[in-house]
Image 1 (cartoon, helix red, strand yellow):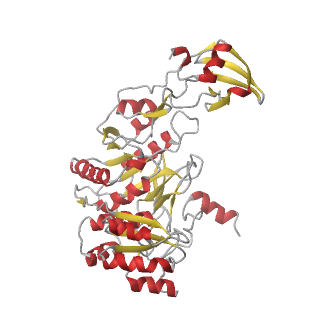
Image 2 (cartoon, one colour):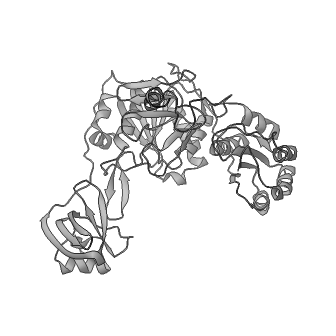
Image 3 (cartoon, helix red, strand yellow):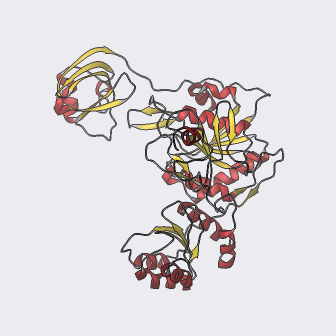
Length: 460
């Protein structure tokens, strides 16, 4: 393909040739829906052939259907090179040492317009070029462990991360940041909270909802907050660090076992569920919202339990679920099942025989609630009592994903179901709490400045 028409073909290519314009032309485009002005961008090789892509002055891209275009007029040419500048990362013996472990997330990135894919910046020099404020916070080193989308993270990666964390702690690092895609970040956070216990330094997972080439990107701010937490924060736990409000006023630090991604595109997508967040964080530092956290220590001691049984499933119950789903899991050798049940922890009666068959076959089955907030209370109705009599074990107020991760972790250590139950129902990192706070539910994230102001000045 001619470089003048990178990625374009079919009707879109014919339109460019008709009006004698090329990729990277600054152009005005008249359409039946109005006039647009911007830079004509290359197209992904995998995209359709019926749209021109224009980068507007706002920084956003828009696709314009060629059937609506009446005229294209080139007014200039400006080829953009979407490369993050690279400079040597300055270091100082007075600053804390932080390592960034990469798994493939796009915390700092550029866009490859050939494929439409986001290319992450990762070396210290690239990160310094993208986010120079990092040099004021810490001495940063990086290690790329994987280069996968977050949906491809799994037990092998969890275990490798846990061992890498152990190595960094024993080497004397002051804090650890893990760059991770946001879609399954809460799964990995839960796994690391069980595999890495009593760490002496902060372990901060961070990602971005919007890539760095977008004006509304949260990447740089999240990375600054995560580095600040890892370098100077006192909370030595596995945490997720992302936007608090939709603005960039502050970030929230969520405990790894009580956090969940709650919106597909909001920058403030992560929420602490069934509790309140650990802290807020700004460039000025970390402000705890509670005091029941594991504190930073000077020693290099950490407990690592890198185990996981992959034959574990999470079932989201729905009306009219058929028993063959459970039978199929048993037939395929699954050792554990977590059910996200309705209400207080219920499923329909047609599933009961299959549940009994699974339990008689030695499968560990635990019940959680798909409401996310609240506890399993299976003793209230006959439905729950019957399920407990069959052998299902209530998982208190563990989130379904966390219970799935913990069951895989527990079964990775033992086949003794009594020991598995002991591991499952013994709180390790806040995954089970005695009660839910009155100011913890959904938007009422207790201690968070915006909510406190609302409760004080607006809500009567």
